[in-house]
Length: 108
Image (cartoon, rainbow, N blue to C red; front, side):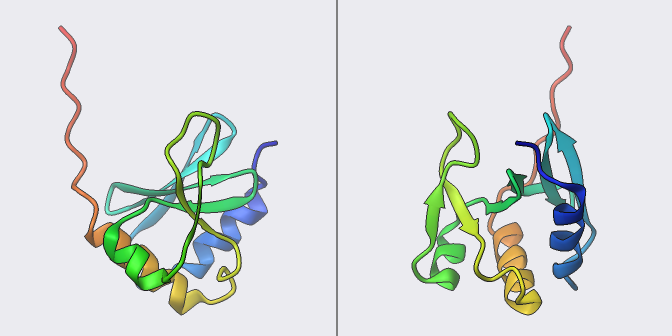
C-alpha cells in the first residue's frame, strides 16, 4: 500500500526548525531528506527514522522494524507524531549523527 500525500504533508509540517526538509517519492513511498542527508522513510503511512546511537538514547526504548521487506530495521515513530518539538529534536539528532552523503561516482 503506497503512502498518502496527506500523511507525508503532515509529517513534513511537524518537523520544525531543523533545516530544509524534503520528501522524494521512491517506488510509491517517500525518502525524507534534511541538508541532502536521507534520514528517514515513509512507508505504508508509517514514519521510519534511521537508527543512530544518539537517537536511541533520545527515544529510550524505540520500536525497530524494517520499513519494507529486505530493509534494515529503523525506528518506527507512530506514537509521537503529534509532538512537533520531540519529532524535530529527533530529526536534528539523527541528521547530526549520520555520515554526510558521498557523491556518486560516474560510471565510465
